[in-house]
Structure formats: C-alpha cells, structure tokens
Image 1: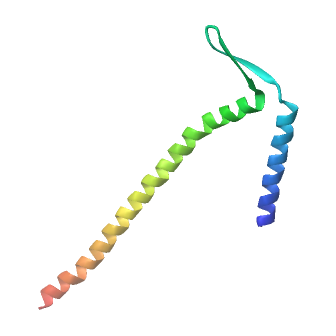
Image 2 (image 1 turned 135 degrees about the vertical axis):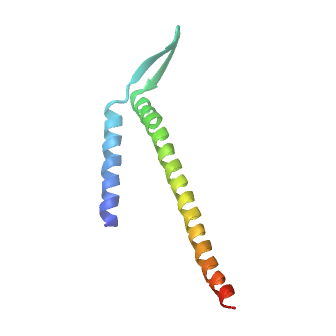
Image 3 (image 1 turned 60 degrees about the vertical axis):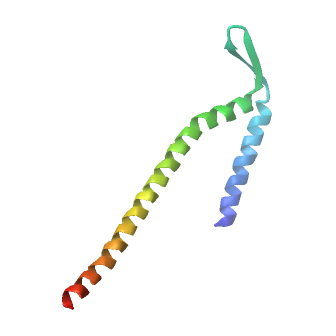
Length: 94
C-alpha cells in the first residue's frame, strides 16, 4: 500500500512539473492605478491555490481542536462521576 501511495505522489509531482514547464511564461498583474507586477504563471496558480485552501484548512483544524477539547472535557466529567458514585455508597453503608 505504501508503494501505491508513493507512486501516486510521484505521478502528481511529475504532472505538475510538466505542466509548469510548458506554461512557464510571464503574466502581468495590474495592482493599483499604475503599479504592475510580472509573475510566472505557475507561481500565480500556486499562490491562488494556497489563498483559497489555507482558510478552509485553518477552519477545519479549529473545528477538530474544538471537538477534541469537548471530548476531553466530557471524558473527564465521566471519570469524575464514576469515582464519586462508589464513595457515596460506602458512606451510606457505614
């Protein structure tokens, strides 16, 4: 299974390298009134991909972090209630 995973990433990397090599040309971006910048097309595509992917990834990680905290709190409450119940029964018996 590790071989297939590695093969998949190698195929993706080679495909991206070939795509980048065939589209390696300047693109002029008009930023403000007379400010222009020339960037390579693959760099622009990678930047735009990260600009769209990063906020979604951060929101996803924040949700996972929040759910883990809720689960930890719930587990601590369950352990506390299980420990308190036998102590109350022993005090009533004495």
